[in-house]
Length: 162
Length: 110
Image (cartoon, rainbow over all chains, first blue to last red; front, side):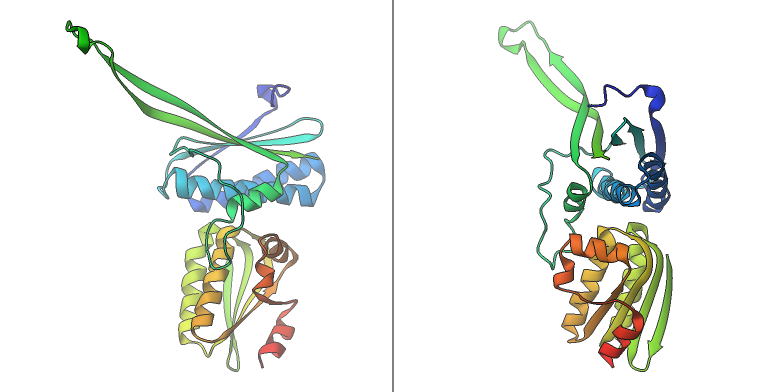
């Protein structure tokens, strides 16, 4: 979906996974989106989606451990803004439904908010796997294989039309 | 995020200003827990000067609401447009008692 954007048109911001870093990054995204769209509402909505996504990365992908890399890449086309949030923590297996929890629940509203604030979003996982293959002279010993994921690059792409 | 605590007779007021997001939630949660524990059961959280809020901040408001219910107390929120927008998006306006400014919130609790 970003095939019309060259690497030189992408603005890259990088933080480590600490809640204190979310606010300045959110404000930077707001400023970029306001500059591109001239719409405070559009810029606010994208900032809100990005903040919720960063909260999710810190809490779930990195299990609240500080010091892990989060990369945010911002880009635009003539009528569209793209924000990619990249982490190297625990990958999501499926996308959360984005439904509202019961009132008493104190968590679970983030995806609802993301869903409401952007027009499209998708999540991509690139895994680096280690394949271990054991061969032996015995006929039945051939083909023993173990595959383990050594690292993953998770990218959430948020898209907003303007 | 700046926190300012006030007392109007028996009504406790916690005024928040600036950005209210995940990094601020431990401090605000602790302050609210203390105010609810030691207070008279009438609490206003004044968010009129809050310029940005996320879902983790909403969680703190829900926690305060539940703690006030346990104490049979009453919690009133004063919201800014940004706060009101997120509260409505997450349908929390159907549960919270929300008033537009501090004087009207104080009147409601007196």
